[in-house]
Image (cartoon, rainbow, N blue to C red; front, side):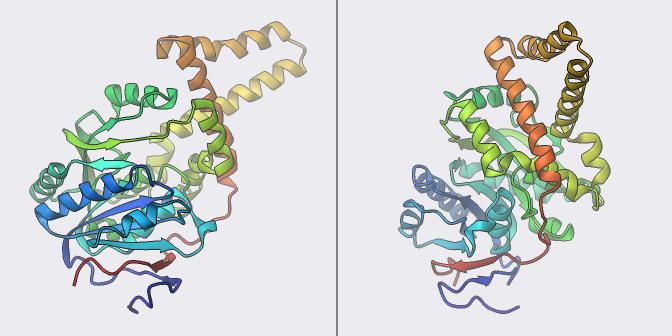
Length: 352
């Protein structure tokens, strides 16, 4: 494979010297100046325990993220050549594309990794050769936003606080690099959300397992943006289209059955679309009382499920955004997910 060219050449960084390091911690970032120093320091502490490298995959930050990262000589920095191609999937795939570790940990730039988890995760994967990846408990550090209050509650009930075999590793995890390469790529560059769910579906379709350990892995410092502003930003940024993008990718992939039967966001979107159609039909037929009842029922149900009207209404708004995104994402143009992502390296290699 061709070597990287020059520190600022917009060349495609491809897998090279794969598996020559014990571990790569790949950090994907975009304008994370508030948290990137803590994220990098936690990653460097982790690789100091087992050996390896830290790669920062930047999607075109315009704040001080890169300047801060340059202060750490043990960090290799690669940056997306064309910021117009940025997405959650692109950032994650760029980090993996530059990785040389037998194991790969994906970390967001607003996360702080518990170094001890890496040791526990590698021990688990070495003892369980049928597992492609393992995660740990994710603690939400930002709970002023209603978005993360609901996420924290969901995690306690069925998410990243639950140990055992799982169908995905939301908020990052430790992956066996060879297992990822066996299913083609780490993250589909076309996805604006749910890239780790989609990866989990592809791995499970290839008979790999994923697990979550009941030990602390990361602290996540999520957005402090108000919940409804965050939902609107997801529509404008394309993030909301993730469900439709996952569905479109699955229709031509071996993981189609897993997505169609197991993707809860797809079910939520389908329910909302049916709800929209029922409302339109009732309105057109002049059944206004029935329209009002059907309009209120989801809000009442979700308020009961979420333990309050505030969380119930926000959940209903979230479901509607997911449904809008389903329609957006399923028609969005796709790039080949197996193509190398054009990028440039702007800091020297961490390994000799």
